[in-house]
Length: 71
Image (cartoon, rainbow, N blue to C red; front, side, top):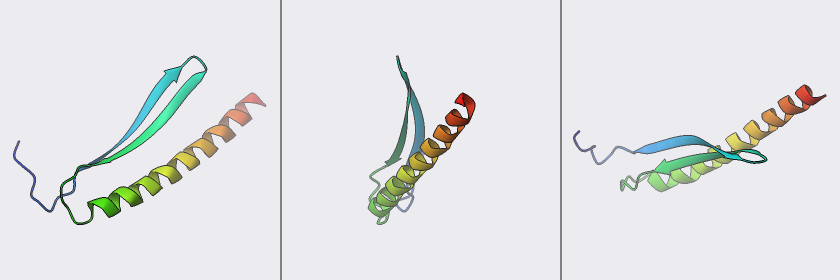
């Protein structure tokens, strides 16, 4: 596989479930490769904010669903 051009931004987004005795933890990870791209830091910050908003929405929806199933 060849190298990426210098103006490409490499990133990945992962949803990782970790099992525990009391339940499951969801980890949401955004990784931005240090490519020297002029927008990489800004994308990392904005991506982190989007991750946080995603977690809030997922948590709220899951809580509503669990409350409906348990009532």
